[in-house]
Length: 504
Ligand SMILES: O=P(O)(O)OC[C@H]1O[C@H](OP(=O)(O)OP(=O)(O)O)[C@H](O)[C@@H]1O
Ligand SMILES: NC(=O)CC[C@H](N)C(=O)O
Ligand SMILES: [Mg+2]
Image (cartoon, rainbow, N blue to C red; front, top):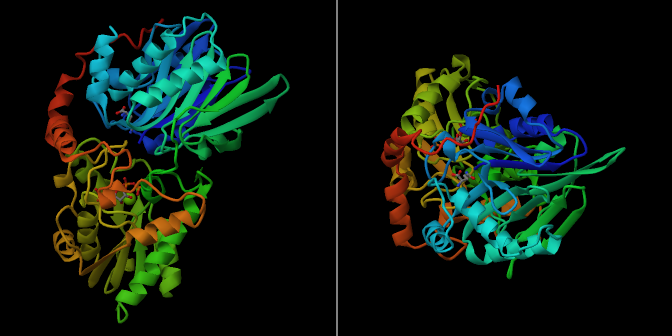
């Protein structure tokens, strides 16, 4: 789940984009990049690492200009090579730079079509394919100055060819910034503005929290299939570019990915998590009528708001039994299982007095590979817990994700082909309870009933784009299981390193 940002401003935007990226860091910890437009040239810095490590003062000085885009990466396609960090660049037409959150499902077909169009894609990234598709459609216009409608027509043609999930921001040299969202709105995208004495500045970002942090006012979410074009002189244009758009935002944004202080598609992420806690609390009370739980303990950080509501609902004490090392990032979005496994104990430590002699209910937002739950239950027992129960605010995750969450292989999912008792046994819990999918959907939907459906494939195996079959999932397994990724990372550095020319 990457984070994207784009700004057309009235003064230098490098620091604002940097600040916005730090606020979106929870969406991608592997790589970061910024491109700005300075006089008619792109200035680029991208590399593997966290935002604070990628951009040194010398890079920031280079990133001059009043417009730019930025990206934080969590790879879901290609490799984790620095050359696949984003934004990507292509020099024709005009010079275009693009950043993408999501994952395409017809990359093979698209890559083949690009060959027939004599376009070269140098990496294994789906985002570079998307950039070339957009470039090819813009090339068709033959105009030296693009009108908003020409840009929108190009986006419409990209929609017509592309399958999967994509929230995109692209900068076109000498023209403007275009941002668009896939026809189902699977990945989020929000538009905002900032009034200055010299005119209005516009910004797009993955989450509203990025706008809040840099003093922009949220205008609205970009609709599914819609495109936003901001010319470099600061005019805003919008148009629906998809033939048949309909809302189906990814429900996992609300469960785990997004920050609680963000609002996506008019749904407060925080409120939806509190609702998840209320629904799950009711279910526990109903199904475990004679429970012997003494205390509810969250597994920091995402589940804290959920656990607090479960405790309130069950009339039980809520205790912060685990302390989180604030210098360690999110474990689930780390690239390899070994690293993820090692990180749990480095990240979380138990406060023994909260566990000693007690029956505890540990709460997490979700159980994916079981990396966290297995180790955390062990830690609770080591800290002296008598019984350890486990509650998950999301249902069992049984199916791979193909839309920008790196869960490509069903075999790596602990709930795949297993029932609750078997899962409890593996993670060592005395009892386990999962949220029902209908309750999860209701918990999110009640904040905006206008949204009739969500993208829920990881729970029910129904892929909203209708193009995902078993053959595709098998192909994905081959490509992106943990071993395949580890092997591919040995290739790092073999791509063209034309992305970081360093001016002394
Ligand atoms: O079953 P698993 O494969 O372990 O994945 C699920 C866990 O990973 C996430 O936490 P993470 O540490 O990434 O982030 P957080 O601090 O935001 O909770 C999520 O909140 C669960 O705790
Ligand atoms: N998580 C994402 O949004 C990933 C974007 C893109 N598919 C990449 O791997 O770089
Ligand atoms: Mg967690």
